[in-house]
Length: 308
Image 1 (tube, rainbow, N blue to C red):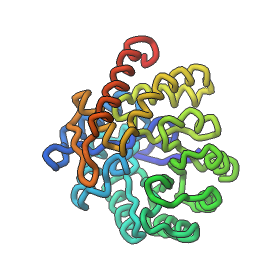
Image 2 (spheres, rainbow, N blue to C red):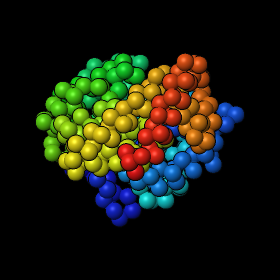
Image 3 (tube, rainbow, N blue to C red):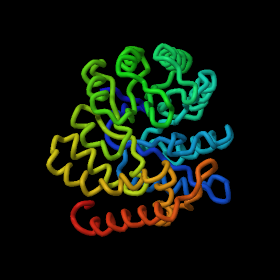
């Protein structure tokens, strides 16, 4: 299994990595809220942190804001868990520059999304990631999310990329267990597949994934940690109970465009404001009620044995 080294410790890419929200207040980064979120995640047992991804609203951050978020998360984590900075762009040169900057700031690796909007061919995708890896000495985790980018990194291309030293894994959010299975079957044994969909974490681990880069762990880190660790020990009967208990909450976090629902849930818990940046908009009334109901139902269950 692939690992990344932070400090003097080799850390396997497994378990729950949280795709962090970026808290805002009055259109500015809410630094105290972000620092507190990091502390809460580490206390909840997560394996790692992923700032400035889709959930972190990276496309709306200025270069200075991106720097600040990554720096603050690294500082708050204080080498207790690895930090994978989201460095992707639809421009290869920009992605290289961000990845270099992540390395300079002290990130332990980079999560690099497929180029959005441009819709490159599979050969273009291969060359994009190869160029980043060649330019920067930092472990790279590919990120395939065709529902957001308009392009699907096919398993054949992922397997080809897995042969490049430095490309250590993929966040696979195609929603296809067949696609994940093919990658697990055909890539080298050290290459890691991480689920990119909270509601598919259990079946993804069932076919060979080693964990999840999670949205819902922003609000219930202990539960997602419990799910992944239970799956990874092979106790799928117990894991299924956790999965089913979490399922409605996971689905509610995508009732509208991520990260709007999870920020609304975080606000209900008092972690931050629900503020998002345009072109994202606040939840509709119906979606707000859906999030409130799912969170209340989870909290009621969590007072029993499921979350404990």
